[in-house]
Image (cartoon, rainbow, N blue to C red; front, side, top):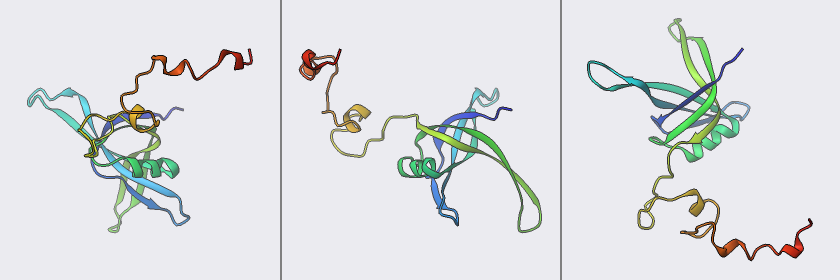
Length: 149
């Protein structure tokens, strides 16, 4: 059997992080996913709002780094939940249980600096802004005499 889903869209709200009674973190959010086709009458693409649940470290990651409007790719499985509401009616919902969540847009501008687009190279790896690989900067780091082969 195969139950695998990948969706990409924008978060419709900030993720909500909760903890179970045993302390397990769980984040929930919804993704606005545009359909591939346009309505022939309006010319607009319809949007599906898909509920997503992320458990444990994935939920903590989403809660910490994602917010309303961010583009995300979610990998996971489709889950159908059934329950009885307060009035005794049987209810059913579909949601994606996320196994991985990835950024699908660039890092948002935090208001610092000149408003230039920030990159992972500049911000996350400790390299100086404007660093360009392929120059002479790596040649001095390794002395051929120190190589074991």
